[in-house]
Image (cartoon, rainbow, N blue to C red):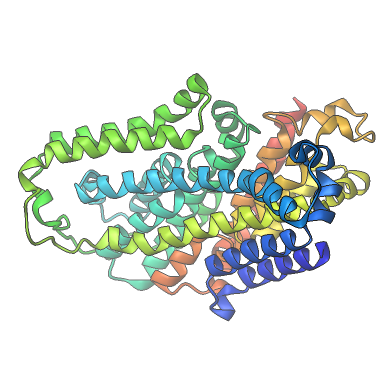
Length: 467
């Protein structure tokens, strides 16, 4: 049955990787793999429980006779809920931060972006867009940032080929900026929630590699542009009644929203509570501020359709379901003991985190970055270093402890691997859908430069670790 569960997860990963061809939604595939895996697991619960949790099961029985019903109750209460809790932490955090972004967008708090994009110099315009995207993505999530910036770009650039180039720069900046912080990308959030990394050390270690992975291919893109760009000047988007907010009110809301997100790591360090609670606290404060500054607008009968939030909503729901499905699927495979076996094999035969990082990056080129990085993170997330008698090398063992190099290599490689073909990145898929960018064109013009910059970044990380 363990092999059947692994086979289902493998087929799920294949379907996720080929979603652009099969047109099967990856969120549906992830949810199917996660739910069916647990149904099969509990059907053979006694074998799995006695193999993985014999002592905990005996304590749970408290002298009672073991039955199939007792096993099911043990799995439901002591095993399954643990992974539901892990998934819920990530989902609630993403839901809170994306709602914060939607409130800010609805109230015009990001209108300053359009005001900054008034130059006709093509390269200057590209770098302004890229820098703004990089900075925003480091504080928000990369999918929301990408979608927002693509909508802004689409409104000022009428030439499709130029939009393709600028769109590629936006995706690169969003993914690299998101990988820089623990709140900018789901895998960083998972590692942070699990205690594998701390926010400050994670960002400090990935700052130079992420900048290399972003600047090198962006520079190559800028050379593809003519001297002047064809653009159209548009007035700021009309959002209905919220346009009555003045600049100071919008700046106040932006300060509360972004400043609150910056405070979440500090909140976690002080309280040791899950980061999603801090995100929900920030959301509640911003929500109250939103109602106060819009108190004269609450009784309006007719609401204007707002383009950007409507674009975001469906993608957000898919992302949340996809994250939960992947965490459940990885969790059930972990509980079968297969992940532990694979981890031991990797330590016996590979014993090199740089090879593991390259493998994670290559896998992320076709499989979603979160799905591939979660799998590689799980390989050593479930292994207690001191249980492995083969780990006599204390320097190697330290790479899997908190703030160990392994977690950063996997997070960085997965993020960069998703930029090589666009297929492994949710932001890349959004670009392919909105601007009809083909994988072949992207790889010829951008993907090869991304691959070089990724390996360059890994080399810098290796030098930093040696020194």
